[in-house]
Length: 371
Image (cartoon, rainbow, N blue to C red; front, side):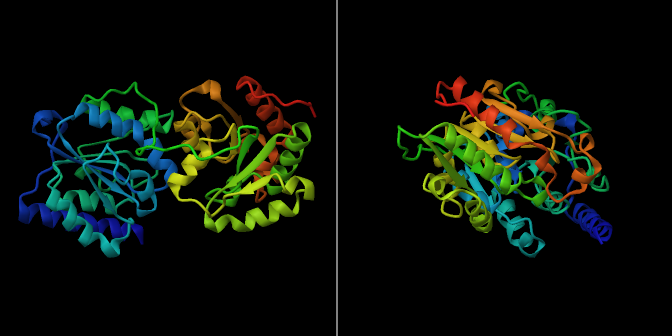
């Protein structure tokens, strides 16, 4: 089905080029001074947006006079609306059913170049060409068809390293600085309120798929250990509306006295409010999630858990002293655990407790009693 879709899109683009005179720009005829409008695609998840920010900042520095258009997911509106990084923002849900309206709006802004940092193939290439972007740079993720590569000026090749660096490598041919790897949130975040007498430990229990979640019983066990070790500990749960079930199951496994020291913000925050809450944490415990990247961008300490994902690609890439990463690749697990619904059970509550304890000590927030 997808092969047929790609073939149809290739024919549409061929017809468009024939009748409109469209011709793809080549890297060797690129003129930086002729570029006055750039469309930047980042239409996927929260974490992808934050991972894309070093490349966006590099583009803005390289083309200071160009108008930057962000093509964003509507879900990320809260973190990009009124951002000083962008001159215009178009929201697109990656769907074909509204692509004509989206292309019409993009064409009106007359971008000469599109930089596709993370979007939905093949509709992103279709829209960029039909919006008359002559130069199209795309970050590939290695598993997509090469059938539409002929429409791209350049694209990322196989790269064994961090996602942030792969995007920066793609932009080197444009003369962009590839050394500035620091992520940032596109809008200003004001820290949320907090009780200075409390030690705030954030738990992000959900993930994009169950196999990327740390088991709830492990979170509950960690909660008990932390609260026994330090009366000032307050556990703050974060997550989306669809994760309320996880909160209920977690609370059922936490003792009544400890429940009173758990605050749930799950499903109760906008993305900006979520980022503000994360800024009040002493440490965030999480898997490979959007909140992890929010915390990293805001220089909040983290303990991150990886089994089915690889931190080489999406783990902390800045301020390494603030972050403790657990990585137990699937290949290192027993066959039974590797095939189980929750292979991240390979990381134990005792291990994570030790990392949280060490992180608090490094941050000069001490646990009074060892467990």
